[in-house]
Image (cartoon, rainbow, N blue to C red; front, side, top):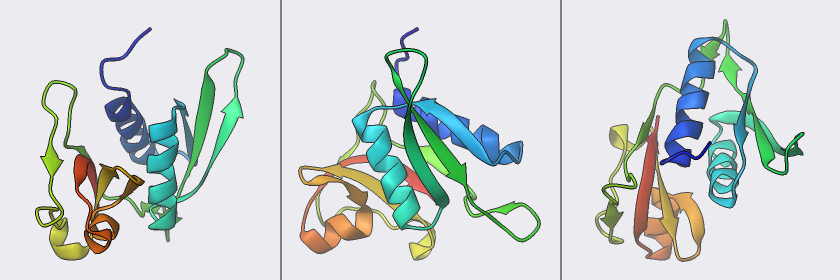
Length: 133
């Protein structure tokens, strides 16, 4: 089955797993999804991730969710910004701040997927993938 927006599918799977208080979530893997998971791990929103070889030729990414205290998630929200029907690009000076710096914007640049702050420091713009807070 093909999806029209695989990144939004991964973000929705993470959101649903957090609401159900799961320890991990599985999603079909791709290079951009692995890069997004790497950014989420570096920023402390998830514990870890690993890429597994499933029963099918498609690889699977296993994302371990991070909770603080009594199952209170480190992730409060995920929002997809750029969609296949409407791509959203931003220049280096136009990268938005999410919740006054408490959240991050994930940006796909010419040097890879990184946070909005990292792209701003390097003087890069790119496609605004999602907001995480």
